[in-house]
Amino acid sequence: MSGQTDERAARTDVHPEPRPEATGRHPSLDPAGPPTSSTPAAATDAAPSPEHPEPHRPAEEQPTAAVPAQSRPTERITTGRDVLGTAAGSQLTDRYVLRQRIGSDPGAGAEFWRAEDTVLRRPVGVTLLRRLPADDRSDDPEGTARAGEMIVRALRSGCFEHTGSARLLDVLSPGTHGVPADVLGAAVAEWVPGRSLAETVAEGPVRAQRAAHAVESLAAAATEAHQHGLVLGCDHPQRVRITPDGRAMLAFLLPRPSVSAADDVRGLGGLLYCLLTRRWPLSVADAARAGLVAADRTPAGRLRSPSQLRPGVPLELDTLCMGALGQGGEGWGRVHTAAALHRMLVDVVAEDADQALFPPVQDGAPSDPDDVWQDSDHLPDSRNDPQRRRNLRMGLAVLGVGVLVVLGYLGVQVGTLFGGSGEPPVVLPPAATVPAQTQAPPAPGTGVAAAPVQQVSAQVFDPTGNGDNPDTVDRVVDGDPATTWATSQYFQPFPALKPGIGIMASFDSPQPVTKLTIESATPGTVVEVRSAPSEDASLEQTRPITTVTLEGGETVVPLDGARPTGNVLLWITTLGSGNQSEVGEISFERAVQ
Image (tube, rainbow, N blue to C red; front, side, top):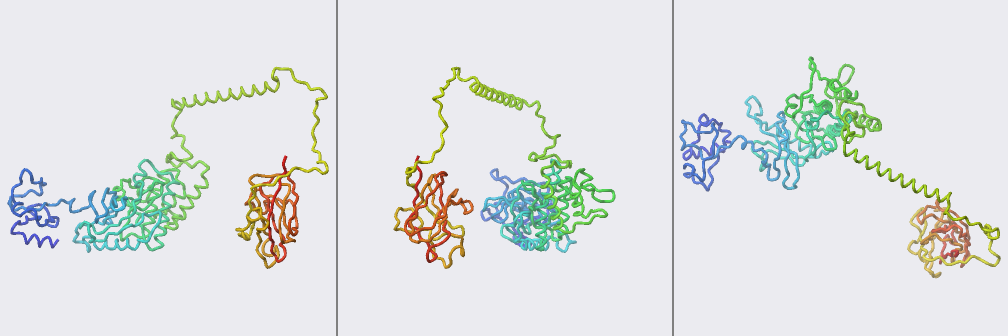
């Protein structure tokens, strides 16, 4: 301001400054600057032309007789709105644009704005710290020390993140480029979608359990903040917003320097009280500023409990509300910490979840459209609804047609069963009677025709590990006995290290396998042949068929082909010489009808 005064004094020979008593404006509100370089001084004193008419001035800015018209300053006298610089559309630095003023907290000298981040193209919530009006009785007439302390608090809380509080994105300190002169600082946070507290309770009080669920998330944020030595400042109704999923969140940061953890507890109690009763129990001025009704009090100055204003409020929420507000009666304690309040809310929400199958106790609030249990008084009367009657007639007609179709089908079946086809029945002579066939054993020397099973795949079966040499197991079904697959060489025989190792053979479809042939060069190997329901079945899910000890060369294992199977497990339970077994080829034969 002193720089402007010196500059004006230097130009008094061209444009003498009007006296305050002549203009009706205080000199401190007249940020007159030098004329632009494109407008000569002589031209500014000329009479206005039709192309450039002189702008209309308010009555208080009209020149008086004490100041000649030709001695008026050429600079435009800014209005109070221009001096403040925080109207809708104003910019903070070159990044944020103010869009809508949400509210204010005069105790903190703060304004709450919905703004736009022009870089990331997203909405943000901005808390502005305004310069307070000059007050000679104050040690800090402009609030500079107050704003500095709040900015320091904001910087300390920069690392704090919680789902119950908007995340701090940016802090603008005093003197930052692009910040208006009357703004002492600002905090930029994520924008919290949803509704304000006043909008939430405008249509009526919130159901008790929904109110407890809403405050529970903010109480959790306050609990964690207090554990880190921080405070939220949730004792102001315009700092809190209700998200679309029903959670209360702190939307605007920078609380007053005098706010303590106890004020946060009172704010949580006030938020719960307001959701239950539609009345704000703390500051009357804050209630009026937020568009809320102040809470009723008794002649003695005590708050009326939520259950007195709204019968049906659960006792635990009624007691918790009054205890957090410091209004607990005799025999009831006071809730001193956010952690205690949060624990009680968690219990209330959990109890409500356990009783979801039962109709809720009527607490005076209407049911929401998405509630399972609806109030009968609020259900629409659809008895005379034309659309409902039309749908009912169509449904009955379709049902009648379906019944007729079913009855007709049953009539045809019954008639066929008892009435026959209308022709005389055919009676076979005794000689034509066909005797019942019985299964006779095959004659000696004759056997069932067999054919090799094609398309056999193999994989290592090892329930305890990755299997032995899985890359070479397909050699046992390649048709060449010279190519072999071998197990690992173990230091001790089975089952010292593992119960066994196996080969799972799989077919394209279940086959009536009648014979298994195993080519091996390690005699003494004991193999259990098992059928498996699938190729990835466990050992317990397989069914043993037979057990065989391999001989040197070819070992033939007869199988029962009565039950077709799609997977056959060769489970090696005893290794050959040197604790190792080797298999050259396996083949299967199936029965042919």
